[in-house]
Amino acid sequence: MLRPLVRSVLLTTAAVALLGALTIWTVDGPQALISASPGARRDGVKEFSIRVYAWGFSPKVIRVDPGDTVRFRVVSDDIQHGFAINELGLNLQLVSGREVRSPDVKVTLPPGKYPIQCSTFCGLGHPSMKASLIVGNPGPTPAATVPWIASLLALAAAGSFAALAAGRREPGP
Image (cartoon, rainbow, N blue to C red; front, side):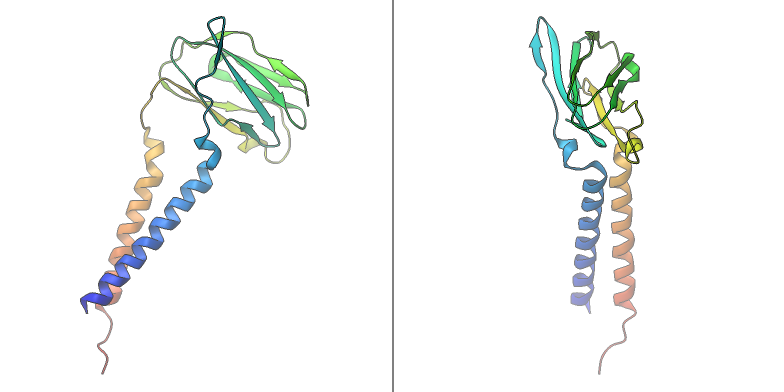
């Protein structure tokens, strides 16, 4: 009786862990792992090259330190877009194929994760067109841990269900 129970728990655990990992991968996407850090330095300014395309930014994560002076060189690959980091007071209007350079901006923000978004409506995927500016080393946020906690709770529930199901089986002849 113990062997089928262990097997059920292990298979359920593996399935839930795999589904949880795939869910997080789908939400964050592989682009979240690509970071534009550090930017090239020119005259003491960190310069970042950004490509904007139908419903995305590349890279999706830009890392800077508090006190850095930064400049963004942004190009739209397809249609008119915007590049906005509201906390820095930056909003660039982009035209397809033309590079736009931001003014030099001093990062006076505290450590944290700040949204980068398209500020020009560009179609149905516009609301999901986001990237992140990471200032310093902000550490984990409660929102970042919620998917992992949910996965662990689902794993515990699935394991409990498997144990209950295995315990209710009627013995064979």
